[in-house]
Structures are given as C-alpha cells and as structure tokens.
Length: 143
Image 1 (cartoon, rainbow, N blue to C red):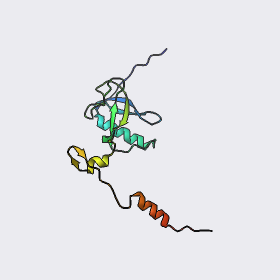
Image 2 (tube, rainbow, N blue to C red):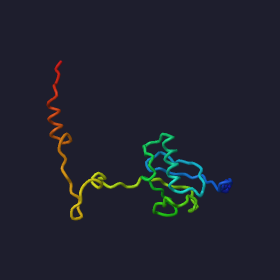
Image 3 (cartoon, helix red, strand yellow):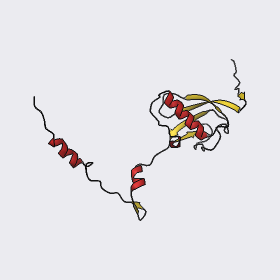
Image 4 (spheres, rainbow, N blue to C red):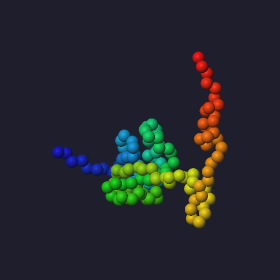
C-alpha cells in the first residue's frame, strides 16, 4: 500500500490549497486551487463563478451574500465570511443557500402595528375573479 503525503504548493503569494466544495443539490463537488489566506467570502464567489461556468444544475445565481460555507468535519456552524479558508486546516466544504424568510415581500413592504405585520388584500388584475371573467370573455372559435 502506497501512502500519499499531502503537499502544499509553495508560491510567492503563500501556500495554495486544492479545495473541494460540495453544493447541496448538485451532482458532485467543485474543485479548484486557492491561496490559504483567501477569505471565505471570496472563495464562495469563486465557487459560484466556477459552478456557473460549468453550467451545473440547479442554477444558483451569482450573489455570494445568499450563501454560507460549512466545514462538516470540524464545526457545525457556518464559516464567517471574513475568516481565512486555510484557518481550519481542512479542504472539504459544503456550500448551502441561506434560508430565506417565508414571505420576503411581506417582511419588506407591509406596515407593522403593535409588533404584528398587517396583511393588506390585493385587488385588481391579480384577483381570481378578474382572471375568471377574462377567460370567459374570450371568443371560442368552432370549426
């Protein structure tokens, strides 16, 4: 049995690491080389660009602020975006989309009274009655 020794590549900028990032819902990990002093936020950005370049599914988007990076073998909480990627001494990570609130439109636009959000009814072309009346008014062509 042959034992492999992990080797760090020395360059003028510092040590470089081959890291593997598994995206939840994707077929396999993304592998690329980064400087060990690279910030986690930059690594997430690089991973999203490589993911898009390879045309993987599902489509994730390019805003790195919507994602968190986990190291499942060392800690259970997400890594800070200002932490360096080499600080933990590991090379395998998991990229997960941040959980969104159930209705971000309500969170941003609805007024708050007594600590509770007021939900306003919407009228107009978005109602089901308008859609139903519009569908009935269309002329049916007979052959």
